[in-house]
Image (cartoon, rainbow over all chains, first blue to last red; front, side, top):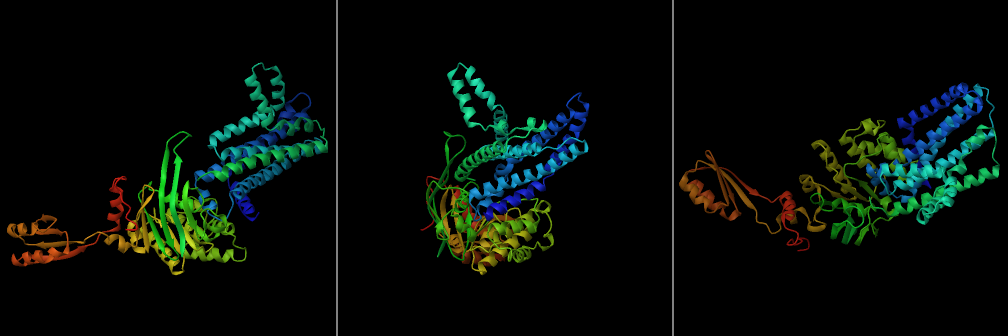
Length: 254
Length: 319
């Protein structure tokens, strides 16, 4: 546990000293501010549009950080050979991997907390009612980022950064289209394609399950049991991806 | 007591995708390092030096043979708390200050909060970076990076220190500092295993040397044993004022004779002919300038095995 904490703190420190993250955070705040303009320009439901656009901005920036920092978590260490001096210490490879993951998730949590705070202040200044559903939506967004980061980390243990980014973005897109995949399989005649699409349906994460932005913008909360199940699903899926990452990482030569 | 014991180590890997030809990095390497000695690991690029170090540290797994470090199989995580390692041309977390950097590696090695600040201060003093304590590593020169790298390898006071090309890229002052540091480790009873291309440094500080080529140990022993093995020292004589007749007499015993103006450089294959040459010089009223016995250098030894075709090369070690 000690080593995991040491690696996580160092990863968090690395992220804090990376100027790109500050730029992304500023961009998110700019987008949240922009949602006010967007809401005011709309003819009707401007409160809902403002709320929805703000949530989308938080989600987008969070996912960009999860993917693009996530793919570099391990590959950058290998490429720059910083991993040599780490693995040569009394530390298990699993500790290293999990520490890197926790470090990035802490960074994401802090980023999301700042974005959420700005978002709530912007809504409050514009006299838009604040619902608990907004917090639910942001919490499930974070669960989605757990999965996306674990996916990026998993791919980066055996692939190049560019391929890892492509695979992760692909899985993210498929993960949001997963409910459509089920419908598509019923309309496909070709058996092979049907098998591939069905396999994708079962293998890919169901990220739509974690997307309740629409309801939250309308001020509709989801049941706590749904939130708990969706969170458990996200944690299990992330754990599964981390287990694969560990298996690959444990066997590789540097 | 053996600190490192390697027996018939084999490492092959694919050069690309599955199905591509395999490359043999180590072809049955065997060597051992005794406690408290400085062991220099030499060989040309691609000989298998770094691969060996990586296997010892658990960064790579061997396909065959055994490697035992401090009594445990190589790669055993617990043993790593007794090993310090500096890789070749190290790149470190450049966003950290020197103090944070050593703190990070100290904590990974299991040093407690109580002793870590003292150790950091001590290590920064030893490597001469006290003034750079709060400076980020991205503002360090190459020499400073090498020194802070050595400090991280030593922060937990390891029994065995493994260094991959520790002098590479350093200026003469930096090289001397590293040499002195390695020698001070031996004085404190530590074992140092290091690879290097800088042969004069190896000659100066190593107790024993191993020369590796194409994944096999070609020669091993003390510097003295290696440079004198199967070798007769030549002698270099410089004199002046010799005429054609006397030169003709000397040429018969010299392996090489070079005349530049009035001066004449005579290389004799062994010391036996020195008396005859000196007699010729005296007889023809020449003037003797110098007589220098030539010792084979480690550099000559280093190049020698590399020039032997692999099929006909006979390992020198153990002979």
